[in-house]
Amino acid sequence: MNYKLSRRRFGQLALAGTVASGLSYLGNKAFAQTPSLNIPNLNIVGIGSSSIITTDQTVVPEVNITESDDSTAPNIVPTVIKPLGLVLQSLITGNSQVLGDKSTPLLEPNEILSGFTSLTDGTLVVAITPVTTSRRQATSTRITFLGTPVKTLIVSGLKRNQQLGSLLGTIDGRLIGLVGKKNGTPPIVLVDIDLQTGEISPISKVKFPNDERVSNLAECPDGKLYTSLLGLNGDTTLVQLDSNPKKPIGLAQLKVDDKAWNNGLQSLVCSATGQLLAFGAMRYETPNAVYSVDKNSGNMTRLQDFDTTQITLARS
Image (cartoon, rainbow, N blue to C red; front, side, top):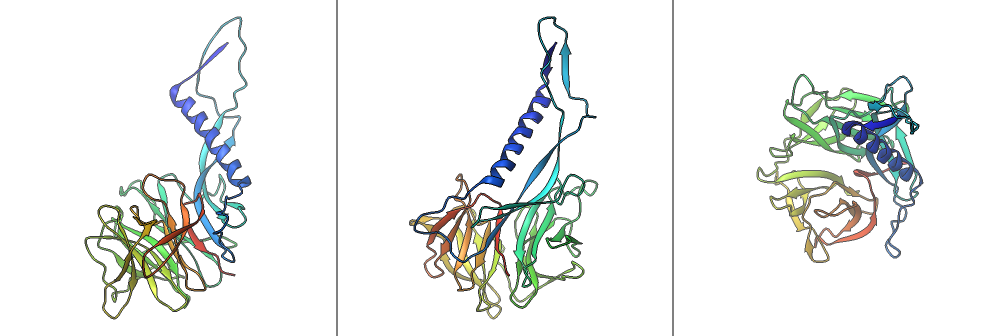
């Protein structure tokens, strides 16, 4: 018997193999560190998403079969790719943890991770946003607390074309974030998020420019808030949020080795010593990496590669 796989089925099996290899790689990976510039005493946690591979013997494989006397059938095990949810990774140890399974996925295929932070009690929080604007297909924007047990709140107060992102657990115990259009364009609003109900309310003291994208929120121990502005060409400016002048205070253009950073940031965090850390990659480059940031000059120093989507500092 000759088995001829359709193009679609071949693609599914190929993807299954890729995802399975990726999960194995993720579980065993030891992250390479720059010899003279590793990151001591910082528990940096990354979050990403993946898919789970399950074998289901009741599924009929999608193959076209023709009979032949001089051939044998290959051992094909039907596979089904289902949403998995979230993968947490530790930068320092390289350990990973999968949250969710085939019966309770935390992330659907039509959703993205739009924000990630940690609260004062150490709870990790992620914002999950649907990518479609169709009322019939869209799920609800929600925040998920990655504790024991996992807790999810539906976010209320968003308009249909808005997205919640860039979460930040503040020093005084609040959860704040940035709300903008789903394509990332202005207007951008800084909001408080009720930790009990998921309801958002604008923080009107800060006014963002209408010609630049705003992403990422970080708070240093002195209480100062920082974010980044993204220009049309990808140029990225570090700014401080100050409620007195009611607009961001531009600090410096971000750059690496005297070359302008050209791709925005995935995350921005601040250590207990007041050191800003940026996370991302230059345009057309991989993987993402953690950089230390000089607030005055905008110079970024590459510390360590980290193949994940967003980061936060885990709190004890």
